[in-house]
Image (cartoon, rainbow, N blue to C red):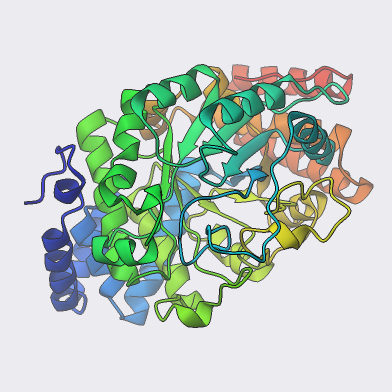
Length: 471
């Protein structure tokens, strides 16, 4: 029986409820008045239920679909303005004991070179990332209790935070590691992580078991209930996601939103972020083996529906997607992107072919400076902000500010100040010119006069060499 308050995965991700939701969506997707009713509710910025979102996704009326895209863009601008947060993944190790059939890290892959970074190599990677201009990392590693135990992850976090390069440092480390126990989450929180990230891959239990035939990740309940344990361990900023293309996208959409509803019901705060990767080629992995792989048109609509369904939640797209696709997705809901990414172990410093140890192929191979310049060309504010995490605005504190609209009093000034740091320290002359012009135009978007005056003052201090201001 479906119960969003339950701690049992089979009850808050209820297969029967999902199938009933999909049946209702098939019936109601062509009901124009019902779709308009749902869009009107979404326009009030209160979000949608999983059933309502499924009906929007099932709607195939072109005029109503355009309304979905338009509303998604409007909602995204309402909560995130024209800010786009930038980050980079840092892969520590590709040793893994799981048998995930969609991932080249799987234990039976004998062709991929296995590699684990030492703390000295991690320091070198971090220095390289700082020199690119990054302030926020997503730490990634395969599941292997011998090569990548929790102690190794905690030591790596300490190393990352300790590195200073040219007066700058990494200010936020988000962590994407395997499901673990409550005490381990407490230790991760004490180590100063930002968001704990874990993708479900697929919410369809039967399909999940087939895709994970061996290894600890094959325990569906342990994996699906991980975010509950993370919350219990004090990690109140959590990031969820599925790998679209592993199963029917409608099933995954409903499951993803049920998971968000469960976290809101049980802990009073939904996911901080939702990631939307989709299956793509990698070493020994072909999309031809996955008949549910998504075409661009459905993927774009999926992002838009998620945005109107969870208006307060950050949405992330990676360099799996091409420049063209990322540009379209920024317009319908995405608020965070990676830039200048390497998905291989040691990829930021290695002179070897960095794709030999990659988890997936990178479609957008532009440098961070090129990505920043592109965002500026399209009227976005590239943001390297990490202020909320460092000011304790996490979990329900962040969400309450976001829902009230007051978070923008912090976000726009912080975005402009971190962009100014990037322009001064790392940008090419062309990018710096574009960025300075955008900062000058954007100051008028800060509604509170005192905050605007303080931002102008601090921008001047940054130009003089001061760093790390935040509201």
